[in-house]
Length: 255
Image (cartoon, rainbow, N blue to C red; front, side):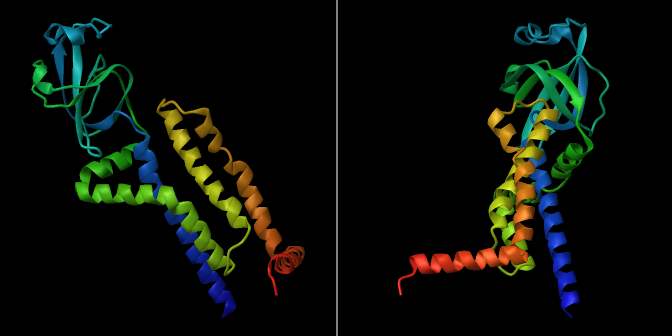
């Protein structure tokens, strides 16, 4: 009976951990994407058709450029990206990089296209990875309320997930809190920063040295948490805990 109960607890612990990591992905992925969206349409426009404040930034001076209508759903935003590249497919997720122009505008002031947009970008365009593409297409294809709910839950998981997960695991595995919790909680937060930092690096987003450092602390804290957790249930650990409790009782409790 005890073996069956232990197996059930192990299954719950495994599922909770997997759920925590999976729920992290939407927020970590989406929050680390800049100027990303789905290609709704595109057209080729002659160089001379652009206004002067656009032509001065088209440094390659080609006869024509591709103008992409790109839409992002969270937040709701329509932008055009002007590029000298030409191989694009509608419905794919793209990202603007190495931008020489990146500004919010009133589309009424730009008559070179019939698209309605609130942002204009001039730069290079690249496709995003499969994971990023999956979540961005998911957010676009789902109703906006559902997409917003998923992103909110994922952000909430990012903010308080490590505390909830470690405390739940502690009570499920041991029936009480432990010293290993003190090291495990910041280790999980550090791992979240690590994942976020890796995405920033892959998308050429600048990271402060402080945040970069936080992202590597889990490499030290996680082994410590595991060692402390094992030590607490060992004979020496139990004896030390009991002696510490007796010392605290005799020192601070007035009889």
